[in-house]
Image 1: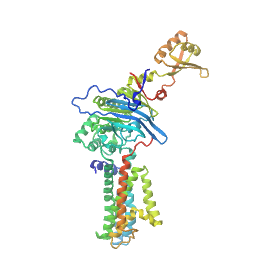
Image 2: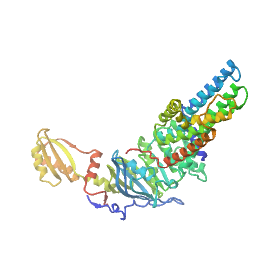
Image 3: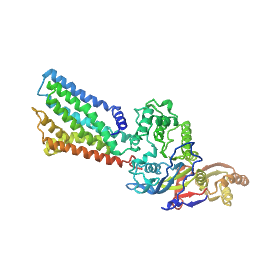
Image 4: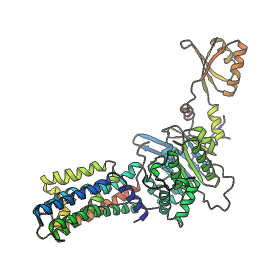
Length: 345
Length: 238
């Protein structure tokens, strides 16, 4: 694993920006937007929700990854101008977003909450959003946004009758209706079925490829790595890691893993394992009747274990990862020394 | 004023079950007015107390609470307000538009029925109907502004609103005369007292201080609601 101190942690230092899109849309008029959080903290009384976070989010799709309660929604709300930072600044192209209603000309927000105007039809709702943006052709913009999210077939139904996924898509249409440079989505995949997830993932990738800055939060690594070109990991309000999905995946795989092993001869197996450098800790638990191993080189360890067992004449009954939960992965990331790390790729 | 926000607000306000109260209370008032007219004839002594206690004393504050808090409170509770706030529209425009919707609602469901009830009972479209109708309209404006502010400031606007209308205006005002000086109901009654020639109302203050207080409270409450909405956080805890 290779990590480097994150330059963006310094107030004036450069910050990593996700790679530019492959190509802008033909004839497209997408304006770019860069969201920057500079040493941002947000606390509620004694509870620190976001702790000294610095990040810069540019064109492309960025995933905010972290466990529940990590501060992802707070970060999205800070970026959207719905929360005042307790310390630091949040800007869009250098202009603060807090107390700046004109920023919404360039920001589209898909909130996590399902609260909408359920008595309206999808068409009426999206059209109202277009009119609130004072677009020159609100009907045309609403039609385009509804087509984009593939909701034309249900646009004249009341929103109250929509499924969770349909509601999510009509919310998406309201955020896209003014073709914003920055699209912020708070846990957009919650409650969606696999087909709806695929559709939304395609949509977000397309938005990113058009040159928009797309930022979405999620607590599911697979979800984020399929869509995002840049991943920002947030744990316990801290910016724990930053990089592309390969680097983050490697970081998570390469961390020390704990295994519980049950075999025909734990002591013999321990003696063989300890001679190899892939494990830093091997403990025979006589009370539980098992072997506890901490592996630092997981690929080598998983390759070595069956061979060692065969050579030693030991029969393996059970090999169980002891800490595979996402929370343990995040705990590892946040426990590493130093503040947020940019992962070298 | 923003017509799109007005339409969205009207749709959200009238699309709820509580909107039934907007119809039930004035229908009750009109039903009683017809009953009084049929049983006791025109200009019955019970007419003005009915308009005072039922219309201005009960119906207007309750409908003021439903409309004033309802134009924004439910949207804040459900989170749908975010679709208005995430637009390049000044928050003051949102507040003023919502107040206008609440006021129109109160003119329609409170002031107009009060006027019609007055016409029915007084037997002619005379000063009783006009006085109480005008009083209900002015009280409606004051209640709408105050309860809208409450809805922006707290998620318990209905509780505080009821406490104001039932405890402060009715109970405390009955024992502490000075408390009536800070009563929207009394400001409205001052106008009724001025307009109705042979009234049975004894206002605790003159019409001009009452109107001045009404204007000041309405303006201050509206400005405060606009400022609060500007800094409204939809996530109060992590």
